[in-house]
Image 1 (cartoon, helix red, strand yellow):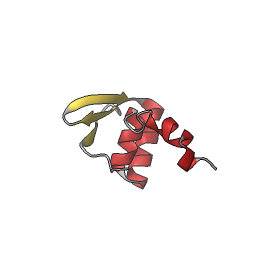
Image 2 (cartoon, rainbow, N blue to C red):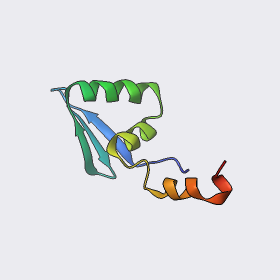
Image 3 (cartoon, rainbow, N blue to C red):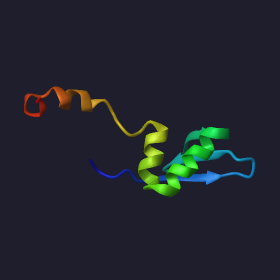
Length: 73
C-alpha cells in the first residue's frame, strides 16, 4: 500500500487540532481526541496517523481482497 502524503496539521492555541489534506480541511479535533491524536502523531509516522484519523485510510476494497481465493486460508 502506498504511503499517504499531503496531510498537515495545525495545533491552535485553544487546543484544537485542524488536519488538512492538500490545503483543504479534512478534520477538526478538540479536547481529549486532540490530545490523543498529538500523542500518536509524535510517536509514529504522522502521515499514516493523519490518514487514519481522517478516515482516508481504507477505501473498501480490502473486503474484496480478503475474500479472493488467493487470500483465503
